[in-house]
Length: 117
Image (cartoon, rainbow, N blue to C red):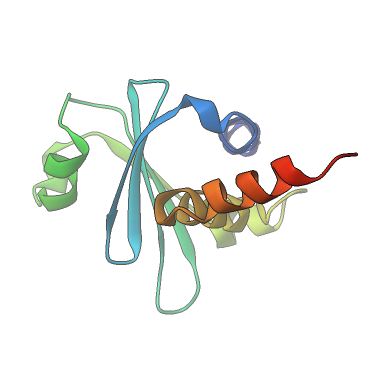
């Protein structure tokens, strides 16, 4: 599935994540300065990935928008991807964004920089 390759590319190139906005359990982010996404974890532990491919709203505007019937987006779920190889990639993306938004990634990087291989 091509979406798995896309998610893997996002995870492997975090420098291309230009903005992150958390709103409760949903994390909105922009990739390469032009592709807007959000990833969220439901109460059932299902992970949802949304690609907003129409319009030019900011992440803040997307986070409060409610007229989804007239806006272009598509959704992928962890259940949809489970049957494919590397189906846990949505979990990894959520953790990656959560660590970056919370500052944990910077802490880990600082500690790893101290280690001489």
